Image (cartoon, rainbow, N blue to C red; front, side):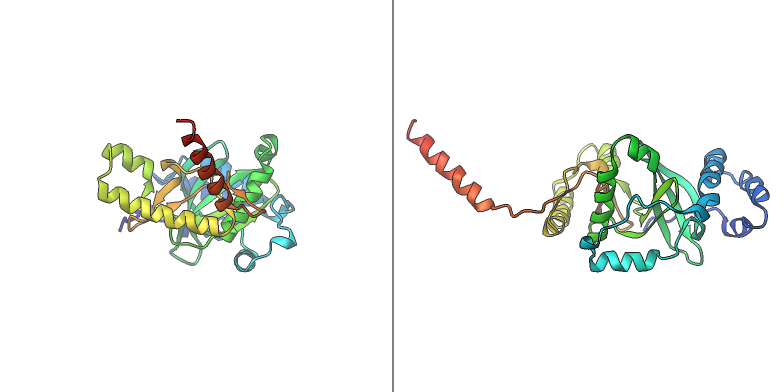
Amino acid sequence: MIGLSLAPLPTITNDIENDLNGWFSQLTQIPGVVDALQLVGFFISDELEMSLSTGSLLSSTSDRATNNHDMLEQKSQGIGLKDFILIKVIGKGSFGKVMLVKKRGSNVIYAMKVLDKGHIIRRNQVEHTKTERHVLELMDHPFLVKMHYAFQNRRKLYFVLEFCPGGELFFHLGRAGKFSENRTRFYAAELLLALEHVHSKRVVYRDLKPENVLLDAEGHIKITDFGLCKEVHIHIYIYRYVDNFHSHLNMSYLYL
């Protein structure tokens, strides 16, 4: 197991509603949590806007209702940024950032993916973002990252995901140079099972690379980042293509 050393934030963050400025002052005195300016900006732009939550960028249509979707909506009912203690930034990208968070009233650690709505619209990524949320709702497999909550405010979208403390497979591959045959077989087997589940939901992943494969605390893989997934809404007759391929191959032999 990989342990986490967390700063003693709960006592401080409980005071946020009473004295926001005082809370920020105390926060800046804690070493090693996160760049204070980043966290202050994050809170000012988001925590104070929760009461203005009117966006509907990711509203799901009724024909997409599934048991997983219903369960997620029930869990996310009334959930917002105020329900999480923000610990530190653990990732940044063109999409936004990923924060390490802790749910108030529990010791559960999550990874919160924060997406800027304006940036999504400017880059014409609305459909990809909708697809990512829908795919996350569909998936329920031990080798796929699980989404526990999803909510939004006027400016941003929030996906609260399973936290994988082992980091990216890309990092471990770079450090090792190359994996042993047994280790490669282990990862390949788990990837195969994960993709088999994805395909069973009529979804094509389309972005498999070491950077999108995380390791959990026990060393098992977790595929993440479903933004480039494609939902397949028609039947694909694989055997027909295989038959055509073999027919073409047999015809080629006639000309040898």
